[in-house]
Image 1 (cartoon, rainbow, N blue to C red):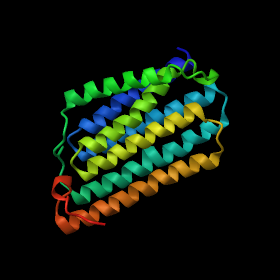
Image 2 (cartoon, rainbow, N blue to C red):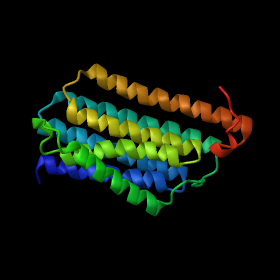
Image 3 (cartoon, rainbow, N blue to C red):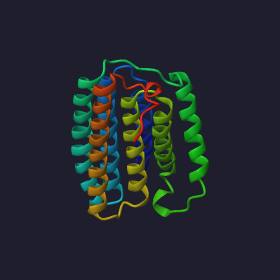
Image 4 (spheres, one colour):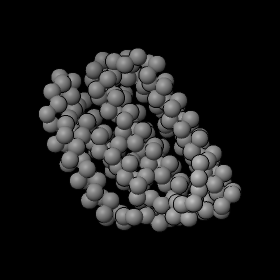
Length: 216
């Protein structure tokens, strides 16, 4: 199996794990699935580092393992356990509808990336299409979920998708860019978790339908 085929297949696995994260009924299960997805992302970085002989991507894989596989799931898992009972909560779309919408998103993204003429992504266009679709699926998760905690997962999915796009198109970016991405994800999750805890303690709910009167 060639390196490009491995990357494309792992990218498809990322999209599958995104659907599992979005559809899982228990928050703890979603945390574990997000950690699994991040591990797949780390595997893509490592494979690309060998395929492109890029030391930058090898460093990306190490930092992503520490931040995305270990740190972020631990932060979310601890905070979610303190805030709300397990449950799927209200959502706009059911699992079957989300699967169909995800397929449509990936198909649309495939038509978007087809005209891209870059030597390094000529064999990785499926992975690039999935990366863009992954970002849009995270946005869909934010829109469709009525629970704040679920919307945090949507942000994390968007961040993983954008990270993969950057690895495919700008892998020669200096390590400072990777540090910025990693710290941005961690601090964003911490801020959102703290805000969610404040809302939970004050109002006793995380359902956005019951929080329409909140003002900044």
